[in-house]
Length: 279
Image (cartoon, rainbow, N blue to C red):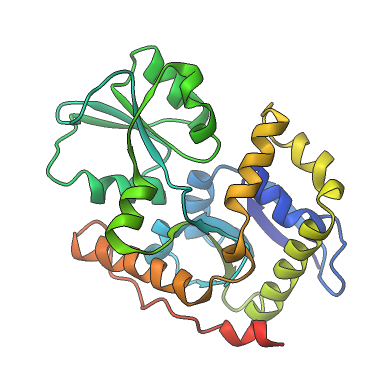
């Protein structure tokens, strides 16, 4: 029986899951794939829509009763945080209209933690690909962007007001947790699922050219050099294994969010599956 698997069409996800999707991981079951932006998967996972799913770390407080966090396959790192973009030299967002990619994304949670004390007049959830053009055209005073936008925002004549990754890292000393991979409890063996995903990551690293056609087919007209930068930045040692720093980063994010009253309190995030990687 095929497992249902959902992740974004972004290059880091298609690169990571190429081998699993194409039946190249020995012992792994077939999968039925849904490609969707993380704002969609965050919502769908609340209804238990998928067996294995990529979501925002910020959504975990609503999902951990039904899903287990896996120690691999996600997006976490350094120098890879969301950016807040404007058209000029604005230094404060009080009274501003801000476009964000989703209300339960890690990017938006980081924005809310950073922006405490500022009072934007309006927050609008906007499809990711519409944010930079919308800010450039004056429909929004600022935009919160992720992923490849950090390589291309200059083309829209925009300025980075803050790099939320740099802010987070300087404040905590920890990497920034962005996207998590979850396995549905009672449906998927989390240790087996982690083994399949880690094997898929290893195959992608061993033969990146083998993933190329698949990655580019889903890259939404992204230029090949931007695709390469995207993968190099977001597929890193934390993709293979969160490790103690990764778990500490996730726990710090969720603890801060709960203390600030931005999310429900989540269970402590720890390396409960760390032994899976010693085999």
